[in-house]
Length: 298
Image 1 (cartoon, rainbow, N blue to C red):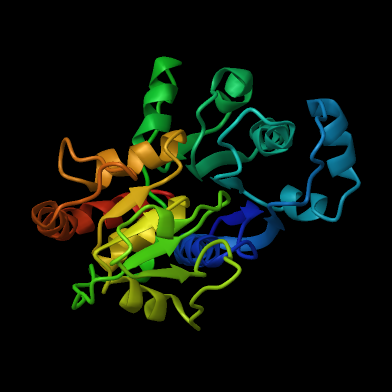
Image 2: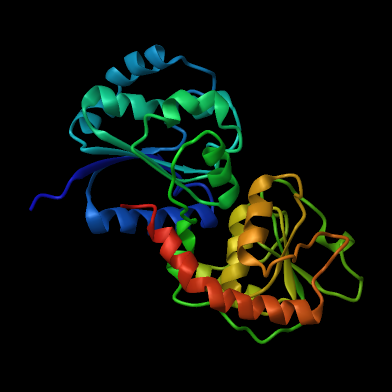
């Protein structure tokens, strides 16, 4: 029986280790069920706003059009690209209508979106929606959009949660927003900066994700300003403390990955008792989170 053919829109493999790990695992999932014809990089479209018809006309003359016409399914891999109402988000949404015009199916998967209304007409045209966290799913429900709760695919790179032998240091993993971990803890505590997501000026760099996780697993906890860094902390078996408190996706991870009622910030760090509780909770929920990540492909 012939496998259905797919174009993936939103190849994020070139971004950083979190995104590349996620995309690699996501791609494996897609390949397990479909034949991939082409993968369109996340930065292939204009940053400035284009209306649907202008975008469609330009797409008709692009290198991607033949593969799109040969695809049974157009899969938009959203990751963090769709979080806000920015002009560059609209092309990703337009593919739901492009698919309809071509007589193919469309899916929007592994995505966060916290401003639903501007994209509502195009969201309604997707055949399958799989947000990566519960806040996006709740916002979709408010607009009567059905979805399947998924999770970021980078956790599919592991079969279990690490249980490292602690050495008392504090891990620091930066995202887009830089911060000073040394100012957030007692001077007697040693901090180590890790380059597994966004880069620091001076940090520890390792050759593989496993090496990073083995080192992070020795920490008491991890400071983070990165979504994927929080997931890496989860995989490493240590609590994460988000320093970028205003982004909803970090709140979503706390709600989903910590025991009920636990939340941390620079003024409220995990106690020893809470750390043990979190480590046990991680092990309890790991299989369910794995199952959710696999829902990005149907």
